Each structure stands twice: as C-alpha cells, then as structure tokens.
Length: 115
Image (cartoon, rainbow, N blue to C red; front, top):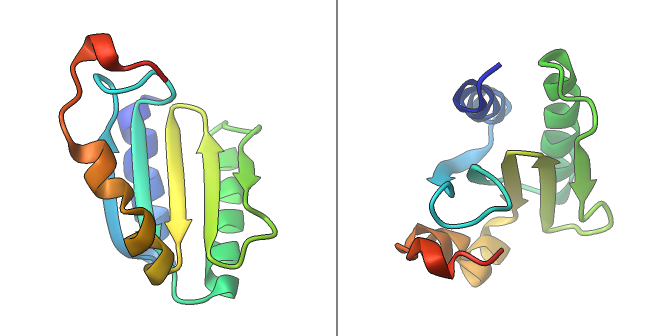
C-alpha cells in the first residue's frame, strides 16, 4: 500500500472515531523522520487512549504490524509511530500549547532538514 493511501486511511479512522481538527502535514522536504505528520485532538484522556489503540489495531489490517504508541502514561498526548506517518493525538489545551502545526507547516530549506 502506498504511503499516501495509508495517510488517507489514518485520517478516515480518526474521523470515524470522532477525532477533532485532523490535519496532515507533508514532511517530505522538511524532515527525514517521516513522510507525513497527522495531528488530531481528542475530547478526554480515555478518548486519546482509544484513538491510539484503534489506530494501531486498524493499521495491522493494512500490514503495518510494528506500530508503537508513545505517551501511554500521558493523559493529554499520544503519538502513534506508523513508520512513514507519525500521528500526534492531543488534548486540545496541550495541542495549542505545543502548536506543532505552526512549527511543521513553515517552509524549511532541504539543506536544513536535519532530523
């Protein structure tokens, strides 16, 4: 499956499970850590946990078996590492505080993409 298809499926899974403010950022010319970053908000700590677990289980159906969830002990942030797609799921206040959209949406010259 192509990375763009995986990204679309992740967006669909998040939307179907009531994630809020889902955005995708193309990282291909900004960083070597992944091709896409998806950022979404959940409504509660249980919702964040559920969204991250649902993503990992659904991604297995697409043949991506070794996804990891970071922030398992956090009540306001989860990260799902799906290799070429990184998914941040935040409580709305933490999302505003970290403001990853602004940081990663800015243009970065390719020679400065160090990560």
